[in-house]
Amino acid sequence: MDCPGSLCPGYKVLQGMDHINAERAQQHWYLKSSVLKHLHRYQQSLLVIEEYDKLDCPTRAVLRQLITASISTNVSMDKSIIILESNLGQSQLHKMLIQAGDRKQVRAEDAHSSLRNLVYTIWSQGNCESHVDIIRMLGAIDFFLPYFPLEASNLQDLFAKRLHNQAEQLQGSDAANLTWSPAVVEFLLSKVDFGDCKVGEPGCYPVEGGRPVSTIMTRYVTRALKQWRIKQEQQRQQQRQQSKAKNPGWQGSIQRRKDTLKRKLSSSLQDIQLQVDRHNRALVIV
Image (cartoon, rainbow, N blue to C red; front, side, top):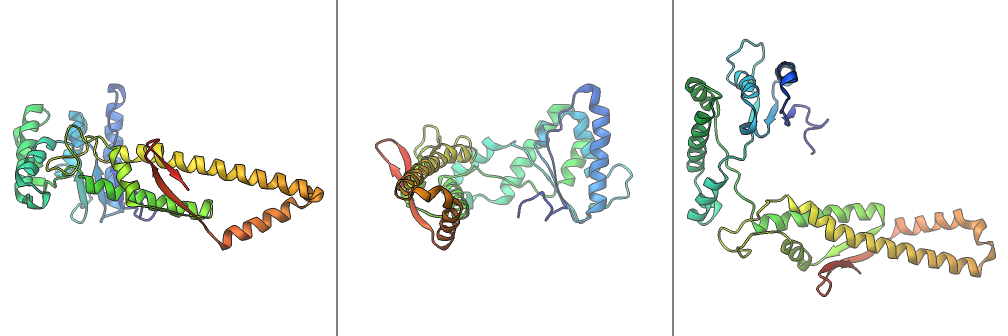
């Protein structure tokens, strides 16, 4: 299920809330009105506020008032979930992982306490809220959920999932059954930047998380598929030229031949395999 979308209307994401001074007051009114309207319509909603720590003070004040219910509204948030997304605490979580050796060994309570203390310190230095407002806001947050850095195994799963999605699309668009070996996933993983550490070592994490996955898939998998499609089209052109030479009336039966080809394609799938070309350091389809 893709959210937000028609299948999950209660899901709302707030992002990109940087405004120029001339429009700030109007945008703050629109922001408050939009959130209240959404919560009134969907009393069991999921509201995601991205990069909360990067918001300017007035925008944060509007959202803080809504979350702590310090303004008079006719909207109940008792059955709604509000997520404040932030990139704060990455270094703290990284240290906790190194000390524990594995993310499963990190106690959720310890991560919660560490992140809560960090947020308190940063908010206190930001001069956006008074001490009372900071304490009230922290008290309104039920849990600080840590998002630990991705590991090599997580990226392997992401690449495998993207390959499966690509295979499903090929079955419909090109009538082809795409397969690959584990070596293909390892090849894709080798293109991810893990810094100076060795993949698989404790404390070795991708520098940019899962962000490079799409770029790497486009650079190697999409390129291999494009080259395969070009070869397929060249072969079809050769077959058409050969048929035209053998049958002078070929032009009059183009549509009939197309219909026949479509029936053949729909009844059987062409088996193709994605392989690693070590010599050219690329992926090829055979």
